[in-house]
Length: 167
Image (cartoon, rainbow, N blue to C red; front, side, top):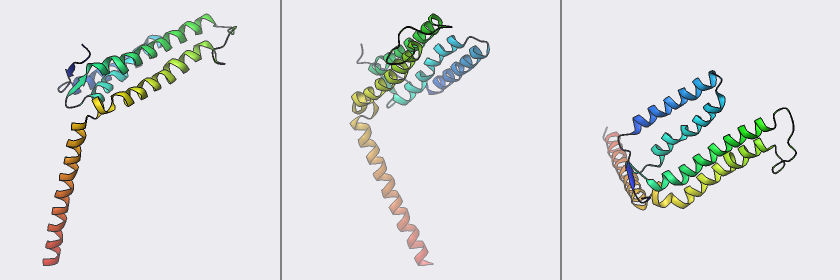
């Protein structure tokens, strides 16, 4: 199941449109005073850009949708839900405990959203880089393309210098 690939070749425009709709929803919800729902919706703003950026040759591995994207989404949503919970639980007062020296609502954001999100994406990059982000075939194709551009550039430079010297 996780060894599959999803074809996203013709979906770039649709994914960009989804991103715009999500931004509009976040803005509208925030203006309407529904900041917490807007915060939860904002977690999904990353998804279209992740799919576009992590695809290779028009496909994306389903593994990447589970880890890091699924784990990252779970961490972000958990951080915001815990922040809301602890903010309401200790509204107007101070908690009797701290988590690593921080108010529990901020600790959730710090540890889950910031550190957890950063570590998830960083580890995924290290684990999946050669397999999904830049496979060997893709790197070899890129090197051939650079070599071809350099060769064409050198040929063009020689032709131009011959034109100048003959005038």
